[in-house]
Image (tube, rainbow, N blue to C red):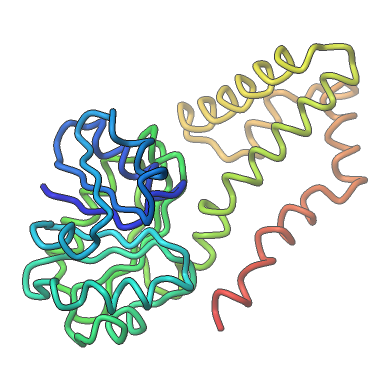
Length: 262
């Protein structure tokens, strides 16, 4: 499959590296400067160009991976070169919905998808939300789903559900990293060197996920397995509760919902 990714930033780059790493696709990445593209020139399976219009002509899938305020300009730039009967168009720009994409492209039947992956796509560990525009055939939604499954897990959903998905997985990856950073700081305060604290925190996070996935259990059940009555773990958990940990996490996840649903 030929995939063109317009935009070589963090998200576009993660998708490009993830798909190219599967050795199943021909990936082309575009950017506004040669300096940006220089990061991709030596990577196997990735072609680069500054010409968005030329890049989309032979593509099977076009991915719009630019900032939301640039989507309209890019859509109007490439619209004349897009084969709307054949090509699939994915946008990863937050808060730019499929009706708007079709308007920008000047085609009410364009096969567009609102997609929200995260930067773990580079390592084929993304959690991606996928919403198809009205009228897109199910078989083509399935094709896009299969493509995204190659870089992680996928949730096919209604467009209104992409916003909470973005907060949980798109933004959420940063929240998880913030928790790991906090664990590192705690480790340093207890006398560990930063590198050692980071390795321990990351391995602990991986171990927690492995237990939950491997045993198929609810996190509360997993917590019970570690928490001995009168032991150390319950003391730490109670300190998290005293500090409003659960409430803070919920508030951070909900913080961007209103803006995304305007």
